[in-house]
Image 1: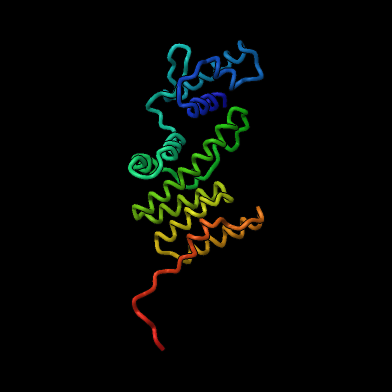
Image 2: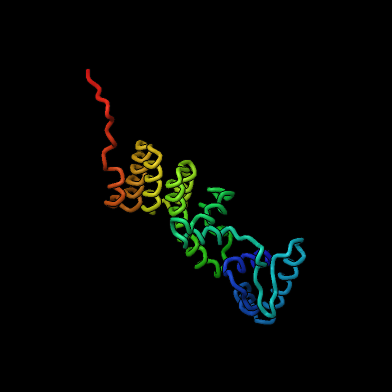
Length: 219
């Protein structure tokens, strides 16, 4: 477990960290000498796990450059926004499960150093999934867009922008009934949990009448 915690912390910080800083975060209950000894033990375990993961430069440690971190890909999309800047990130996310994208960061861990990271990444992930949905819809990849939007709604059911993104994805595919059904779910959830109505912006998404057919039925 100590080796896992070391790898997770290095993955989240994205830059070389001093051994003293790492030891203090991972073992705050111990004096410096004991925590540094535990860090050396954890590093020994990492280096003997069969794969070269951690790089040491002087007194600083980091993940090796070739190690891929899924959360970094997702947060890169959250920062990139829509358009051409998101192209490479969307390609990298192609093999990631939508269910995994809807999960919290290390949900079974209770370390104090994880609290801020967990919330910050949760917000970035929500934004990234919404950006990803709109981008996939724009490209005509409607099934994937809807899965991305559903992941955002699962991650934060009370976030209106997530519901709005899913409604837009249904409308982009031409499924007005699904869009209306999702709006009703959002409205009922907000009423039950917060005693509020959906915002005007989300109401406008489903308020426009559908396009009329050129043919006319007469009887």
